[in-house]
Image (cartoon, rainbow, N blue to C red; front, side):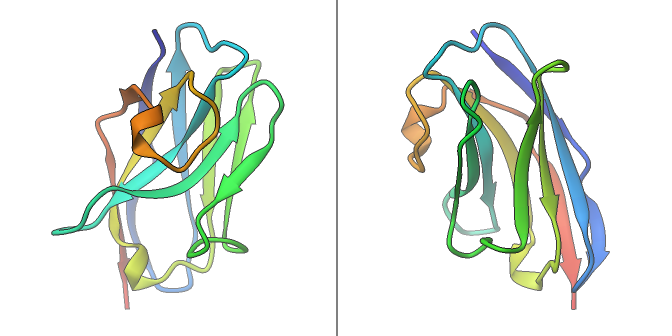
Length: 123
């Protein structure tokens, strides 16, 4: 079973950038996908971006398209989320996730969740 640990959150001003990293361990099969969710206070988990590990195809939430980029390094089993042009509404705890049920926005498809890293964007 895949396990994930994320890092890289912090405090940034609006318009700034942050890069999140996620270290994955365990077997990722051909239908495996890794991605990022976020949860703001009082809100449900929201899909941010995902990546089909073997193929490299990506999926983004409309709210982050053009600003966030998800990528991977297969040699390191590492996943990244480059976040540019950050807005105060991006403030949330960001979770790295992994699953073997294909690339989808549904949280039900991801069985492994990291502990979360806080991203705070000040206005």
